[in-house]
Image (cartoon, rainbow, N blue to C red; front, side, top):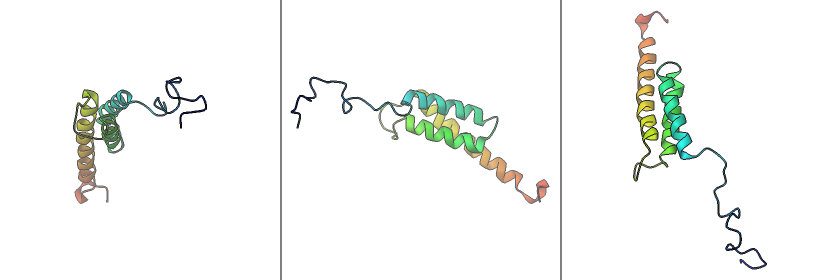
Length: 101
């Protein structure tokens, strides 16, 4: 019911017409994911790798179809490589001959 003087034509920036502004946009998420992926190669790869994957995935709009922004795609790929290397490094560090036990 658009009556009572609150029609959508008169107020184009009404709360229902614009995005909420809460949370980062896709470009920011792509850049954050890219930074996490690059930093994960140097420190805390087991944490920053999955963070890069999540940020990149959210920046791509949670789908593989359509146009994909380059930073988001690079963040997902580098985050996956980073996570895989961290898991291999942890598995190699936990072998019985490494001196941890």
